[in-house]
Image (cartoon, rainbow, N blue to C red; front, side, top):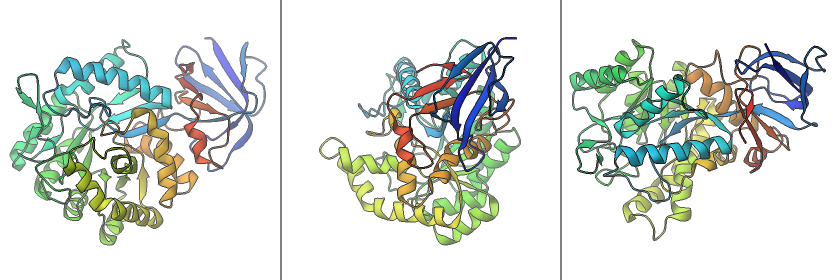
Amino acid sequence: MTETEYLNFNLFDGNKSQIQRNSSFTIDDSSGKIVRVGHQKDQNTEKQIDLHGKYVMPGLINAHTHIMMSPQTNKLEYLSEAEITFTALNNLKELLRSGVTYIRDCGCAFDVDIKLARLQQEGRLKGTEIMPSGRPMSMTGGHGDFIEGLDGETRWGYLTDSSDEMRKAVRTAFKHGAKNIKVMATGGVMSSTDQIDDTELSEEEIRTAVEEAHSKHMTVAAHAEGARGIHNAILAGVDSVEHGSYVTDEDIESMLKQGTYLTSTLIAAYVIPKYGEGKLPQYMLDKTNSFIETYFKRIGAAVKAGVKLSFGTDAGTPFNDFKATPFELQLLTEVGASNEQALFAASKNNSELLNIDNDYGTLENNKYADFLVLDENPLEDIKAVQQSDKEVYKKGVRVY
């Protein structure tokens, strides 16, 4: 067994809320896992790399992406499977370069995310790892009912208009290889036929999705922006509320009691009025401008109350670049999260939400060496993670 020791760095391990000075760890080169964490040179390791006092932290886990989408073209419909795959592979490279070493994809036409994840499991595709959801669950005409295929032969999502249809769709997704189920509880910014506070899937339908998914070791993430849809999703027992734009004080209390995670994706709303004027359909601008101020305030209220924060960006939505993932950390701190809370959300919390915490999320013995090397201390300045030339390591191998 060959090993490599990294030494002379300051460690934020994703577990402790302070920097551990003059740290080192040793990696098994064959497995890519950490075998020893220490604070001094390991005399028994032949290969050693001095990081010269820089700052090491876990690779970012982004729990809400759409690798099928291009934030530049904003094309949503009549996408072919070949085009989606090409776009996804390019987006995975952008994610890795930005410091994202693991993602949960939250809705992909033609189950391309599932197919790419399968190639990763076979060792045929390296880079940022994928927890796939496959096609999302939507009501007819709802957020997720987009036409796909060159001839319009399919939809982005499964169309589920009853509990029975939901049960069959979740079982089908499970058969295909999904590890997470995405349900559309409300309308959204990018769908032209609804408003963001429209209640779409019913509580009963979402509850059926949760029961089926949890019985098969899958998690459930709910796209939920309007208050009623958020309430239904929480009552139904979803693992995470995505966006949470109009979350009420009552539902914040429910999330605290149930341990429900909140993935705020603030950047997805932030960039639309900033870059979209004259470039996006007016309905997208109108919707975003109507709720963004309230959205940021309500996420701030949830942060202040201590709701479990997960970390995601909704990357792929208009002007929401995959390489901009670290900016979401800054936005979280601007609505009230501490630097520690933001960093924990993108590391330990996300690994626990995704049920991958035995192998990922923190830099400890027997976990994969997915880590970033930064010039500055991210606990002191969250913008340190935005460093464009940071070093990125995946399973102990430097990839950028």
